[in-house]
Every structure is written in C-alpha cells, then in structure tokens.
Image 1 (cartoon, rainbow, N blue to C red):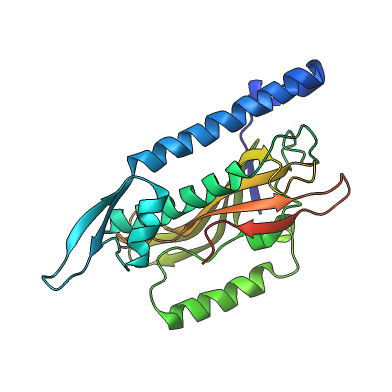
Image 2 (cartoon, rainbow, N blue to C red):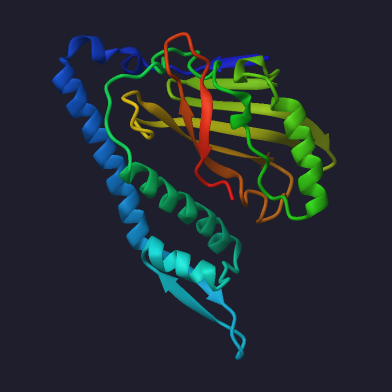
Length: 253
C-alpha cells in the first residue's frame, strides 16, 4: 500500500493544550454554530423536483426541509443528474440539521484527530457502496463485495492501493483496473467534519462526510456515476481505549 502524507506546519499545532476549558468550549460552540448556520443557508437555497400530474407534470420549488419532505411524499423527483445529486445532498442536509438541533457541545472527546493515523481505528463499514448503482442485480453484487471487504475490519486493516492523508482528511484508492479507454480507479474519500454530543451522554461523537465512486481521467463513466456516492455518518467512541463504532448513517433509507 502506497501512503502519501500531506501535512502543513500549521496543521500540526495542537492548540487545545494552550487554552482554557472555557476558551475550548467557546471554540467548539463557534464551530458548531458556523457549521449549522451553513446548513441552514443551504436549506433556504433549496431546489426543485418534478411532480407528475394528469397533464404530464411540473417542476415545483422547495425552500425548506418541510416543503422538500412534502414533495417527496407526493413522489416528486429530480429529473436531471444535477437535480438528483442535489436531492440526495438536500436529504443529508435536512437530516444533519435535525441531528444538530438535538445535539449539544462537549469538550470531552476521545478521537485523536491531531494524529496522522486518525483514520486507522475507524470501522471499515464507513466505506459505502459506490455511487451510480441503478439495478437491483448490480446493488446485490456490489453489496456482497462491500460486505466481504468491510465486515469485522477497521480502515487500517484494508489493503488500499494508495492512501493520501491529511489531518481530518483521508483519500484512498480501493482498486485500479486498466480498460481500453485507460485507467479506472475505485476512489474513496473521508472527512472529519465536526465533533458534537449527538446522543447527549456528555461525550462528543464525530460527524464524518464521505464519498465513493469510480474515477478516470480518460474513460467516460457517465453523468450518473457519482449518484448516491456521498454519505454522512456519526461515529461514537466512549473512551481512549474504545474502538469507534457507527451510531447512524444520516442518509440511510
């Protein structure tokens, strides 16, 4: 496995040992408020879904999670790839807003995000199915392959082709194959977004964003290749010696 480390001097400064608990809490609150505020802005930006009717159908706008869910209940949907991708992302946004509005701030956490090896003890089940799966047969095949890859393993146990690591950011190539059009890689990305006490037990959980899809510089993979490839997951760690576990996938149907 080839590992590339990308670390800046600034990213190695560990500030928490130099500030008071009150200041640490204030910084955590600021990060929390800023992230939630950005989500609420995205909620207001909204989008549109196509709603079928006796005349064929019409695009209807949504500008809140409530109006989005109302359209989904009417079985409205995104028609273009861009609309479908945003439909998936908007559902994530709404579920993250709901989770964050019930969460609180805690300065207690057991994730070593200052370490370049922060990702190694995360459960391998955070690796999702690839985006761009359209048929039940493909889903069953890909799901079986994923289960074989991740079951009972940590990310550090996976034999990645290549890994690029930054603090709080992780990229990996799961596989690489040569086709007539060129190289196609199975790409996986993970980002540590926010620490917050989602279950209100006094200890922070970790919110992760991730993505998995085929990528190629020379092969046309289709406009729907990335569809459904993004995900959000909350990870729990109860003590320094505990192995992190998945609490919930926010975009899991």
